[in-house]
Image 1 (cartoon, helix red, strand yellow):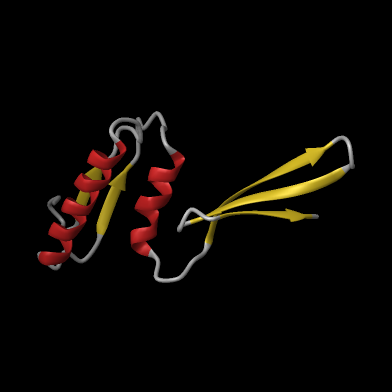
Image 2: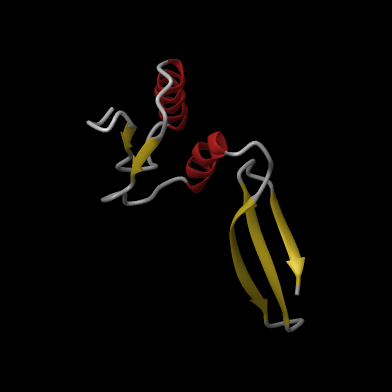
Length: 98
């Protein structure tokens, strides 16, 4: 917790033991909830990346409904179509032809 009373979590990487990182995340989030912390600062400065799925799982703690949080466009030279690949906070993927 920082001086403002807000929770503070610094995440240096999304690499490592997936289960351990997920367990630590759950532990700290539950501690914030148990202490009625009014808000959370998630510090991602100096984060070199890692498992995208882990980041999406972490984001899922803040949403009650499924929502699109990421998408990329892919061009297929063979059929000359653009595909939109997306990721939701639940980790389901989709491909939409544009």
